[in-house]
Length: 407
Image (cartoon, rainbow, N blue to C red; front, side):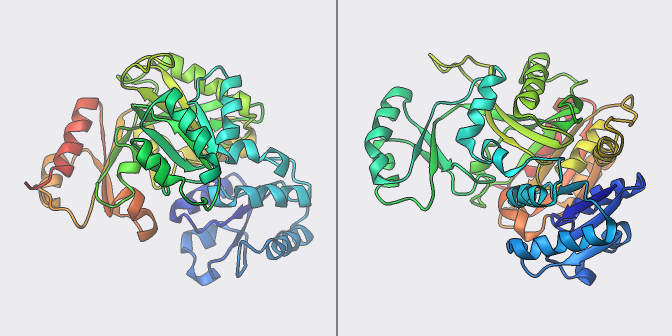
């Protein structure tokens, strides 16, 4: 089996996917814009061969790379990046080289455009926020009508985009008018604002869209409050075998599995984001109800796969490789489960407790610590601590200790 891994050196942890695939005898071929000897040694040892391209956005250069591999190793079975930025390029390359695994260009809109995702969510029986697509001054009249229907605040972000960058909360008509006073650089989606926390349904499915591994990540702090660099962050993995105090886990699992079927996801890691309402929104949804936010056809970002592994006492890298090689999960899922939590810090903030005090208080529970690379710092913070606990209240006490700030 020939598996072309696009951009295997970035994000930095992706060498772990490659190692797991290699352990199953899969021929993993890498294409990336990092010079060969600048890639990680562990990645180089796991790849059969690496093809350096100067510009991964140059589709002709990418085609030459895949063509070289096909001429040398035979038919290509998979072309995957598991990276939001390259999903569309992956799809085009699959079409060119007759790769039948994974999405093709005709399917991309439903997994890239937030407005198009809503139909798949609704077909799965999951509510979605009411919305309007806006482009600038010509959208003002419709936007005013929309605001009178759903009320303020409103939330706007690019219809096609990743993360919380370029997202804005509009509190009143004045801010709405100001936002739309000039032509926008791209189409934005305007949605009613939901008072809730983000809870993701993460996992891996087989080639019939059956979920073979599921877990959830809970994000109490809205990402939009973190990306400006003024706030630190925490979130945690909550295995389905443990209590979920903020959501009905049976209903959540059922909804997540239905969404996977609706999108037609096959042999992929997925990261589906939902809001869980903190309070009733009259005429729309009730407190505790889930409302779909967006679907990501990739693992959760940052170092979250490692956080999941600590909580689930297994390796999701190995499960993914199992699915690619055998179309099933062959990992032992009977080990003790934990609430696995990460708490981050900002270099520009002053904290009550230093690193030594954190280790003295929680050393038995800490599973990892380090610094995020610069490209993740805006979204995640500068440094992080991972820890795992059998009780959620202990995990939350840990994050409060790590993030407690000086007056």
